[in-house]
Length: 61
Picture 1 (tube, one colour):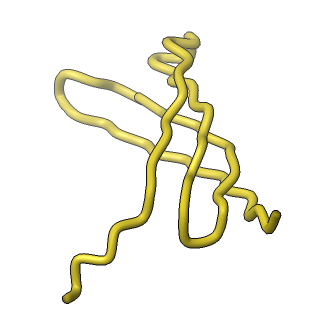
Picture 2 (tube, helix red, strand yellow):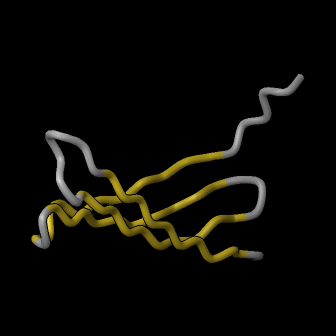
């Protein structure tokens, strides 16, 4: 089984959200499924923890 490691980071700053960050890590089965665990940090405090499951879809046809 060929698994690819995934690491992600998102940062958002608006008038309503100051210093909002998300960190994620997971695995992807090449060309099929993706599984990630993520956590959020808002103003230096840890927020929610969750999972994300997805798949690749080719819409170019």
